Length: 168
Image (cartoon, rainbow, N blue to C red; front, side, top):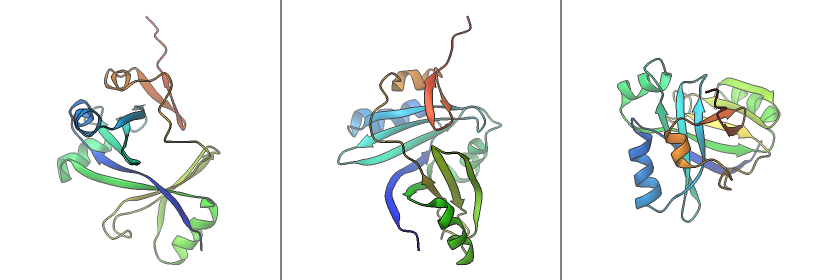
């Protein structure tokens, strides 16, 4: 049986990343870690590390075509998913499936970020993202700020973020 590593983060669906960032960053003392736009999923995310080491990922839909927009319309703002690290995700997926906890959207294309999900219907109401990665996800990004994320200047490029190239 595969053993879980650390819980990386809890993700919260929000309508306003800026407002939620004020709560988790300014009021609760969280440190901005990373974030940006995922153009494929049409979402904007920001991660904050709260003392003493709990990470929160805020997720905002970029437009009305995003699955997250539909999620918020149906369920309201709030808990979206939990992400946990594992050492051998390729071994975990068949274990989960064989135990009746079917996995979906397994992706082993990027060696820096393997992932699979257990649907809420199989995860007792919780969308669970299981990940295998070699990246440190707790160190704040060295050249992307929360302001860059809010302004749409940061994008996800695989398992990393970068600033958009200004074509103007």
